[in-house]
Image (tube, rainbow, N blue to C red; front, side, top):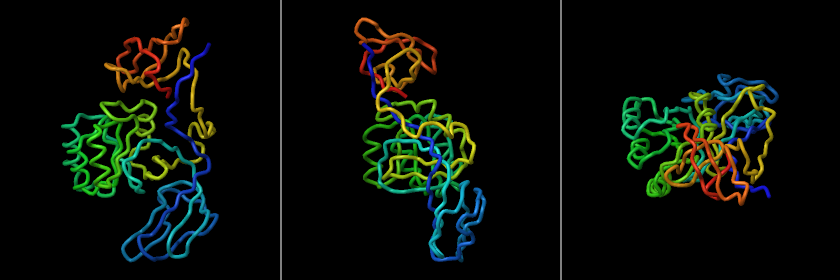
Amino acid sequence: MKMYIPCIQKVLYKSSALIERSLSEEGVIKVSVGQEIKPYTELGQTSSQILLSGVWGNVEDIVENQSVLIKSYSVDLHLVISSGLYAEGELIVFPNPSDFIQHQYLEKFAYSLMGKVIYIGNSVSKDVIQLAQKYGVSGIIAGGCARSTFDFAQKSNFFLGLFSGFGNCKTPDVIFNVLSDVSTRIVFVSGQDHCVKIPMPAGFPNINAPLEEPIFKPLERGLKVLILQIPYFGDTGSVLQVDDADNSKVLVKLTTLGETVEVNVPNLLAL
């Protein structure tokens, strides 16, 4: 009898995403309904701001002197979020550095971090969150963190998003690869929707992928999984073999080390 395990629905490809871009105050809108736009198309202007689209798509609707609704394509990355806030900004991707290196990066680029959304690495500490707040960062996303760090972000009403959960959790490769490919692009993060929305151009890879994934996937050879068992907690890998007798144990080849380990069911989530 085939065993099924819960699936983490992390990446959704949207061929019809609506994104609103708003002026900070009443101004002049410079585009029209139906117009095709690109990331550096000027949407509008106030006395102190020039609003660029940041996305590819077509103008769907306009609120006069205030905002533009754009129909676009996107990749949505789902995650656990500390705040119901909405934030947007240029995405900066750190290459999974240590906590010490995170501090160095933030301090080195402090002058240019205002309003940015930063992928900080596999884990994030309370100290790094405090430093990000100090420099005006819009939001931090990471693989995981301690529960106390998440609680601090909640109490501070700071936007912190986690892809894997609490503890020393690695960001799944499929997520990090997407983030790396779109570094420096404007992204939109929604606490209410629990996702990071990344605008994409028409014709991007996987644009015709299913909009929904199953809640459960069959536990079978080749399945990509996230391990929830010490000492491999937070590691990802591929299922090599399932115990045919009772499906209680599986052999998983770890993505990073290439090592094969035995994991007890249900200490697995499908990716």
